[in-house]
Image: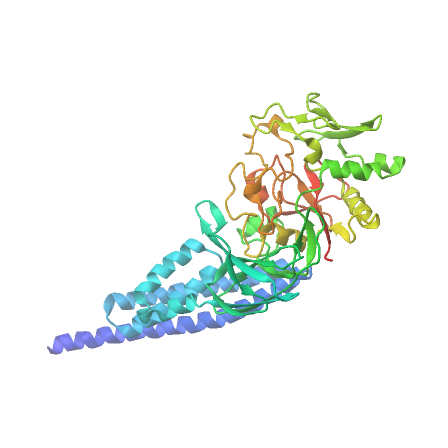
Length: 487
């Protein structure tokens, strides 16, 4: 009996030592977490203001955050060893549950969904009473005001499935504005506001656990045909991809919360038909300057010409069969489907940055669209992805016919070419914007192009992808989309 008591005392001392060491590691990790959060905020401020040193500051924040994760992992290893000796010690199991809870939060921050699910399953074993899991599932509280008041409010929820992120079930009416606090599970949603005599307004949003979220929507009296009203609000902007991919390929900032004010955005890319109307309104000399053309490109050139008052498009100067005059279809003979295109309904391309700026100036000054301008990068990305940081307008998956990119027509180069706008509703954004990825790249303010084109691989089509481009370049895969100041 004495030997057994001595051994039990020694094991208890060993467990106590491991518990103490784990506690010290947790305290250090918590302190490191606060430092990492401060450094992260400082780095993101540098990114948001385009200040120098942003990447250096971000690398420093990531290094501290990595040390925090190592600290929690080491604490978990100490507690694993303690539990192997004393599986019945409630104090060890409680401390282990705390460590798992902290690691769940870290996995969420890094958007590592698989790791989060694994940690949650382990947490369920040690979280006696479920208090920590209840904190993870604490509902947010949504309040809504509209101007004017009395709008009917509906809410839709986005859930991720095998076919990407989709709205789960029909919209649920939740009342009229102003709406008091409404409990919602943490997640991604879309609010729909309807008022008599006003256009319907959609507002994607994310509610965090236990968050009091207040939305304020101004409902416009009218929205121009072909445009969507985007109310002011927050969204996730940038990339959470591998750091090398984020910096060197996408040229994107780290994923973080950003905001825009209200604005208008075109449902579709600017079409050839709209560009022809612009050309006809110009003096002859300027019209000649604004004719889209591309002499050489790896995926073919492009030329628009005018003869006897009619315009003619030659999609590939080397392929005389890819020629169409105004009012006649363009036939892409190498395709098995969508061979015949009403090319005036396809996106204009082969325009330089200054051409795009001249077009939106004309829309504004002619009174066709007061306040017309190129989208800012924040406006473009919010319209393309909604609020929840999804990789693509419709979620995180892209099937070959969801957008017009290299796989859509079997990677056959002679099948590459534009599609009529709106031909791929599988990539429609939460704001009901079409072709934000694929078809053609789109000029945005600052001389950057966004969205990928019809000959690009799927990796280029992620909405975070931004490519600063020579503003004088003309390319068969670069067009534009119009934004405008909100009424």
